[in-house]
Length: 172
Image (cartoon, rainbow, N blue to C red; front, side, top):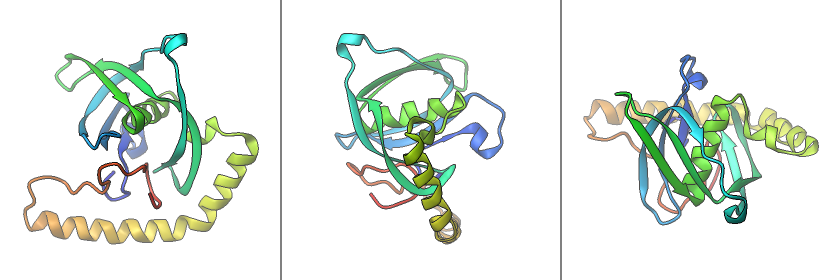
């Protein structure tokens, strides 16, 4: 996740057969949220309190392109922590987008599944054009993170500064 400058990662994206995702994501107020959810379920928003926002998303599974996706402004996800305790995670803005995006992964959806057919074709063509450079940046970043880790950092380096609108590869 850090190598690809992502804000979240679903277990099956790294060939782990669990309904689990991890996140390290800032919300729109600059507050950093770090954690995990096992067996996440998104609570449906009340129809009168539902507000959709359109913002760019990218994905570690679709390296390169960033496309506008409509998502709810607020999200509540229920699940379990690694000890089996129930957790309820609430997010708004960018953090809500991260929670919804990662839960989609565990339900078999990519953000491209939420696009029109034309947008999806365009995103996949863009991915084909960008993928070599994206992977080259990931290799370089892995080297950089590995060198920093060998030097003894206390925390993993988080690539997303507060208030950045970013998920996966690409520019904010």
